[in-house]
Image (cartoon, rainbow, N blue to C red; front, side):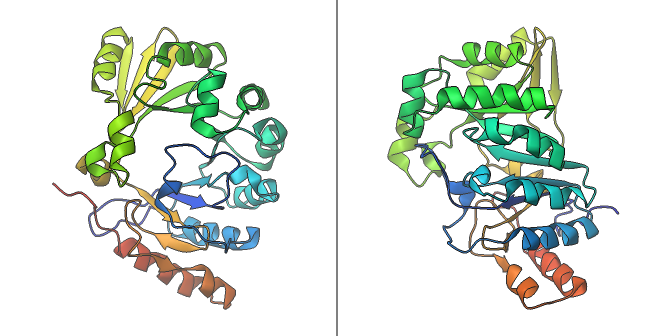
Length: 308
């Protein structure tokens, strides 16, 4: 089935499900994926029902996130249930703390690939960013994920001025050595961030770095359906650059719908005023037609946050 398009002709290809607000680290830049905190979390069966309807309206990809999704004791069960639906891609974003424990089971359950948030290989810098001492656990988990056959394993590295902007080369060598991909992420700048003081102090523009990467690259690829972000292939390794999301290019190419931990459709990452309740209808025993209608309402609520 072809993906359904919103009123701006953007196909809904991907569904990102935040399965918990809970996390086992406390990163200094965390924005909780643009979602408000809720104690009410969906069950694994409810997540499965949501994915089943998504499959029936043409969604091709599922991404599980948090919080930290691996703190859910039923995470393997969740992946296992979703994998029975035949999605083209099932992925997960994690901080990697519990990856050593779960990598093999997640792969067997049907997970295809994984993104791991890791901003530094320096123990003291890691403690400053996360408030925890888990760096070695994360590194072991990364290697375990590669060995388990999860592919690709991407490292999400948020660059921050005065903290880790000088560590890109070291991280790139680490990813090349272990067969991973490095994804560099630009912190939202102060003009568009609620915490102006934080972003003003730590924002680091990736434009000069991208110029350097372009000069070194053996090949540069632009990802059409991923906000036109660029991938740089250098000396057998791969670096992808992710610019701030609050821009017209991001919105114009957005093909993702989101689900909050308490089971609401979130049509836009940057807004919380147009959520559409979904899980209440599942709990009330509504059928597939009614649940599909809820999805269509969410899709019709999609409006680019930034328009040209």
